[in-house]
Image 1 (cartoon, rainbow, N blue to C red):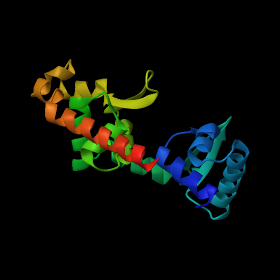
Image 2 (image 1 turned 90 degrees about the vertical axis):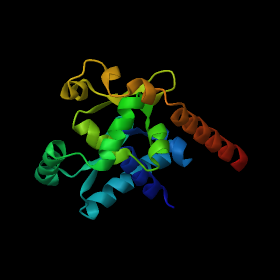
Image 3 (image 1 turned 135 degrees about the horizontal axis):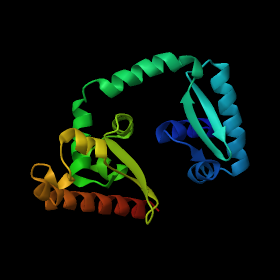
Image 4 (image 1 turned 135 degrees about the vertical axis):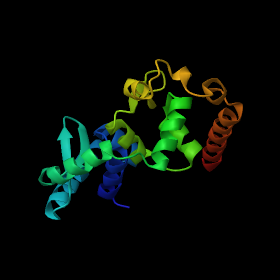
Amino acid sequence: MDLKSQIESLLFTSGRPMAVKKLADLTGADKEEIKTALNELSASLEERGAGLILVRQADKAELATHPDNNEIIRTYLKDERTGELTRPSLETLTIIAYRGPITKAELEMIRGINCSLILRNLMIRGLITEKVEKKKGIEVYDVSMDFMKYLGISEISELPDFERLNKDIKLGQILVDQKKDKEDFFQHAE
C-alpha cells in the first residue's frame, strides 16, 4: 500500500487533525516522506475534483469537505442534528451514559463495530463530549450536560438502574477479558 493511501485512510478515520510526527510513527515513514505524501495527496484530491480537501496548519493535517459543498453539508448536518437517533446511536449513547467516561476502544469492544461516525453524530448533536484523559493520553467520551438537561436529571446516577448497570461485573469482566486477549494476541505476534 502506498504512503499517500495510508495517510488518506488515517486522516479519514481520525476525523481530526493529525500531527506529521503521529503519521510518521503510524506508517513507519520519516517526516519528510510524510510531508511529500501530504503534498501529493492534496494535489490528487484537487486534480480529481474530490469532495474532500487537505487542510494543513503548522505540523498538522486534516481532511475536510470541499468548500463548494458547504450548502449540501449544512443541509445534511441540520437533518443529522434534528432527526431521530438511529438504533445504533441510541445503543452507543446508552453505553456511554451507563459506563462513561469510556474510550472509543472500550465502546467498540462492547458493540463489536467501529463507532467513529456514531460518536461524531452524537457530538454534533451535543449529547456527548470528548476529552483527553491526561494520565493515559487517550480520548474518553461521556454524556454532556445537554443530554442530562434533556432527560431532566441533575446527576447521571438518576438514570434507571444506574448503580446496577454502571457496576455490572459481567460487562466489566468482558472488557478485561477482551483487553487481555488483545494483549496476548499482540504479544504472540511479536
